[in-house]
Amino acid sequence: MQFSSYRDLREKLLAREMSCEAVVMAYLQRIEATRDRNIYISVFYDEALRQARSLDRKLDAGETPGKLFGMPMAIKDNISIEGTGLTCASKILSNYTAVYDATVIRRLKEEDAVFLGKVNMDEFAMGSSNENSSFGPVPNPYDSTKVPGGSSGGSAAAVAGDLALVALGSDTGGSVRQPAGFCNVVGLKPTYGRISRYGVVAFGSSFDQIGILSKNADDAAAVLGVIAGNDGSDATSSHNQVPDYGAEMEGVSLRGLKIGIPKEYFPESLNSDVASVIQERLDLLRSLGAEMIPITLPESDYAIAAYYILTTAEASSNLARFDGARYGYRSEKSSDLSDMYVNSRTEGFGEEVKRRIMLGTYVLSAGYYDTYYKKAQQVRRVFLNRYREALANVDVIAGPTSPFPPFGIGDKMDDPLEMYLADVFTVPASIAGIPALSVPVGFDSSGLPVGMQLIGNFFEEGKLLGTARAVQNAGKV
Ligand code: GLN
Image 1 (tube, rainbow, N blue to C red):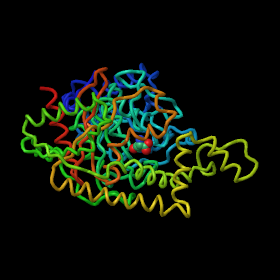
Image 2: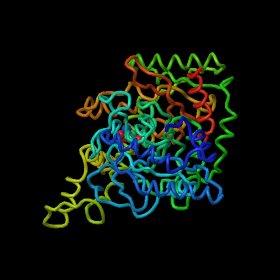
Image 3: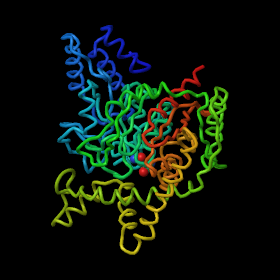
Image 4: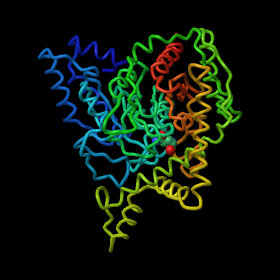
């Protein structure tokens, strides 16, 4: 029982061709049969079936089905669902149970989505390969010796493997787009503030955004329409009206669409397979009427440095709350309070998280603040202006999502700087706060997926998703 889109599933459910219970059961059985892939951290066997049965009764009673009626979803394990584990794939939260629903979860429940479980990720969403997880790595669905990308590696692998129809992830610098690209699915990071962050464990608060991973742009639009919008519990959530994304998508046509092609997104060092798959699809889009406009984003080389200064600074502050005192793991070894803090954090956090806390503390320290943190903030403003200028002349910006195809498990673990380069094309949109997505466009010579990134202007998710649909469909003819 597999579905190419939510529309397909919804039609069958509403026509009573199959029950929610049967659909959810089929997903749970596939999840059970693939536990060795390490995708799910926890599976809600009983609760998902209970939810499904109550949805079936709802139809029996003639009640109106919600907008996401029966949609089987996987949720990244840094998003709060009341009464269930919330680990962030970290030892420090291994015994923690969430005490409230994230706003997105509440909204999804109201529209009758079904939660299958929580999925694997890099610890506290720090990483590009899902290897920084206390639960261990996740194999790429196309080659089990390769990584699925990160940090939302479990979310991407779940959708790619039909272990959920749609998944939520979080994207601070590429964590939805990059794994989507590596697993051949669509991954959308909306405009900063489009979706409430209430109930998402903070990493870099001025960057974090919940994102959606799905098989196609229409499913992402359906979910975005439900979870977007202002929330009194998140002061950074936007008051902008949530548009009808389906209608906005209809308004997009490749004919005359202006696609900006930044030369910095096609450097000499770009993997040649990635370069040719992207180029081929761009040529196809041109033959279908799109206009390619060469642009330049000259500060691109500074993106990684600015991103890692700003996000580690924010992370060092956000992660101060995990001290063994209030919740989470507490070291047994301690003799006094300060010892307890130190031991709990030393034992509870993984390598990468500790590296970032140290980096962040350093760039914020007196004497270095102006040199690093303040400078990076200034660079952030330059990026914002530069992308605004570029997007005033084009509809979307296109390029590869990742500079290379999925890499081998273990290949980059000894070299954090090498790992950070995986984000070179995804962090700029996060720095600027603008929406971006990854859409599948083909495979490299060893059959590994290649994603194309599309970047849009503030709150133009509809246009981006409409373009993504056209880009994906162009490959099907
Ligand atoms: N890979 C990037 C990092 O490690 C992005 C992470 C994310 O978007 N959460 O910071």
